[in-house]
Length: 251
Image 1 (cartoon, one colour):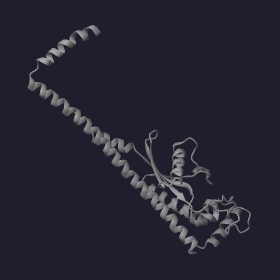
Image 2 (tube, rainbow, N blue to C red):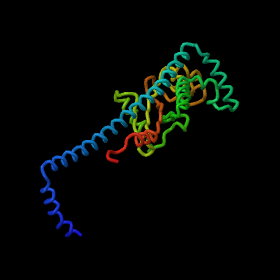
Image 3 (cartoon, rainbow, N blue to C red):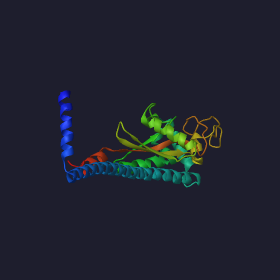
Image 4 (cartoon, one colour):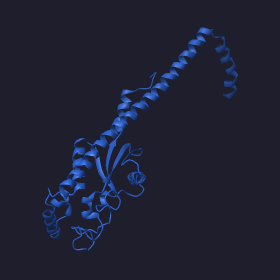
């Protein structure tokens, strides 16, 4: 088979050489048009995909920004006395002592970061977007990303980025699940010190190193990052839309 192919190649070149100049020009022109069209198609599709991903990121940024602003507003209400914190704490302590989960107390619902993620979670649910809290050393273990997971790596990178003076948000596509992950760092404020501040501070009234619900205070400081709001957006619909809208040329 190889000898036959080689023996025919000179005939092919002879046939091409025998073509008239106008035919050769037309052939070259058509070939260039096909190549240029194919390249433009690839560039256009990739540009469309990039722009759509940017829109998804902006959407995720809006949701997480709402969560952050809700957290900030709730913190202001708590710190200026608009919320009767002492009464809620007393009620929560009594309820927990009787066996009620602390997450079901009214006090827990008014914790600023809880207000933030609850607000975003409800909004995301209406838009069919996944919302999560990711945090290292989380009190609620369901918020702790599994070691070696995509979320664990992304949260670690966000922490490093923030410590080096970079942005407080980070987005990345998980190719294994074909989804966009967007994280916004949760920064501690003064209201967080009530539960997470230095043992023995003004909130630790009995100086036992525990917060009002009995958790050990970690000694964190305002401005530090502890966890992140995370939005996950599946990209299967984007891929399907590209497949429907754009078809390879000459097909």
